[in-house]
Each structure stands twice: as structure tokens, then as C-alpha cells.
Length: 59
Image 1 (cartoon, rainbow, N blue to C red):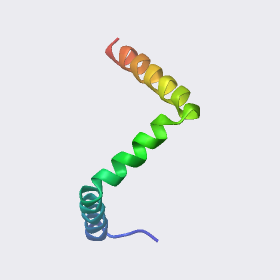
Image 2: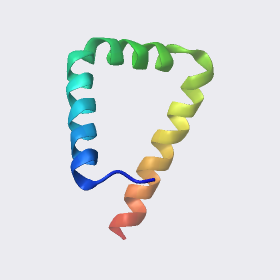
Image 3: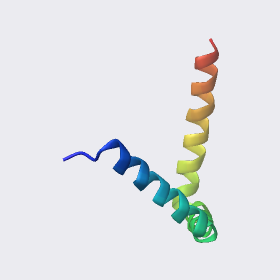
Image 4: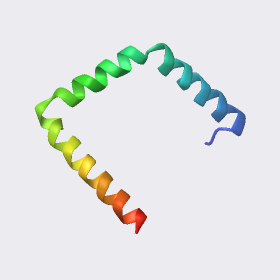
């Protein structure tokens, strides 16, 4: 079952507004996640992969 284009746009708009209203909560959750020791390695790996991919795209 798929949503119509209008329903998808309505849902996107709802979530956009929700994120705007709850921006501080979202940011706090992200800060807490990044502060955990087990996630620091994931962040480093992601950043390394990101920049390696950027270099490959330029070539």
C-alpha cells in the first residue's frame, strides 16, 4: 500500500514542522549519542569514509 503524492507531501510537511518544534530535543539526543564512547569510533569511521568518497567523486 503506497501513499498518494499529496499524502506523501502532507506527511513530509508534518515531520518538517515536528522537527522544527522539537529541534532542541533532537539536538540533545544527537549530542548524547555522539558523546557515548562506543559511538565515537563509528563517527570517526563515517567521517573517514565520507572524505574518501568525496576524493573519489572528484577524480
